[in-house]
Amino acid sequence: MDKSAIYALLNQQHLWHEVTEHPAVYNMAEVTAVKLPYPEAEAKNLLVCDDYHRTYYLLTVKGDQRVDLKAFRQQFHTRRLTFASAQDLKTRLGVIPGAVTPLGLLNDDSRRINFFIDQAFLAAPGLIGVHPNDNTATVCLKTTDLLALIR
Image (cartoon, rainbow, N blue to C red; front, side):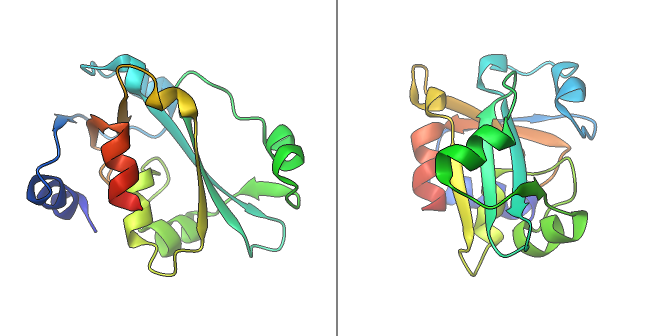
């Protein structure tokens, strides 16, 4: 699904969302330069895989949070983790570097990516801002709607 297909799906499902179009951003430093209506809802998304490239994890945390892969590995008893390659991003999520998003899971037909989301996104106001499989926009929607959509 590309950006237009994501927008069509959100509209078809009658899910509340707000879209902010912006220049392409590739990291959180660039995102903070964009004026978003709900900056507290900004999400950082990382696709990581084990050292055999067999098991993949999409980690979604608050934009200002640091991801400790060593702590994640210990908590969930995984093999050594590394960031997925640009080819993995394209093949598994249908996105480029800088556009990683939970909405990319809609492109994971094999449903082999393990998704972990920071529970803080469920706390009031319960919003999350993610890319619509393209890093030239941010879509803000209810976290519960996002979870239902990708489930």
